[in-house]
Length: 286
Image 1: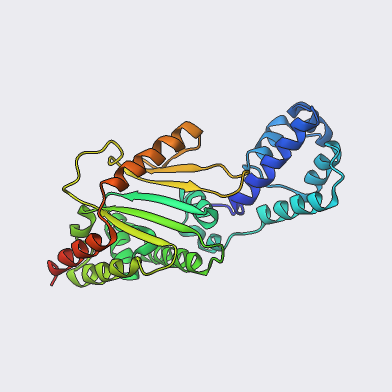
Image 2: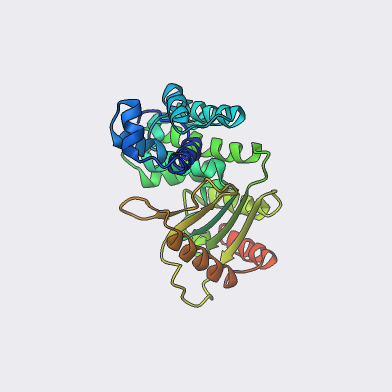
């Protein structure tokens, strides 16, 4: 897939450009006429879908009457960040458009609330578990592409540990994932050992949603709620579905899945009981 640069800087720039245009009392048609382009190009810039050019951004800021140099410099930096190649785009062959968007959000979110049904979360998979999982899910894919998928997953974990802004990932894992054998018994023992260390990792919290929990409306698919600290970023929900991921950004949808997560969290085990259950599951792979 083509390299499009990080999503979040483009969204932040677009939100500011829209705010400035509306504050100036101008419509999309005015901005398009000024740049001698289509209104769809301006719309794509404002929604973060277009690739920003510094010249276009300067022209729009002049049209909107922005004369604050510090703000101009900040927006132009966002334009530059939105054009640069992201670290994960070195592995383009392993990327899909959904995964590109997912990693963009994952790389900038201040909080992720994740509920997982079938498999261990990508952020805490061992390399051996990830490799066995990909070989099982994509049996006809070339080995080189599968290895790129594994490399990308491991780099995502490294990037999270390298962040200095203290992001948090709160994970609720359905108990079934502990007993679904991926690869071999050795691989599962290693993976469950890794899960036992998750709650000692800064920023990560793992709890198990047990079989004993009563049915819950939110426990029908794997989902993630991405939350951001800034006013310019849109909170987003990712639904993992067999036919392809679905993205929700409407405020009502984000609120609904946040409530789903909270209800599931109330029915999940505490950290000590989670460790006991993982230890019990591990003994079955001896």
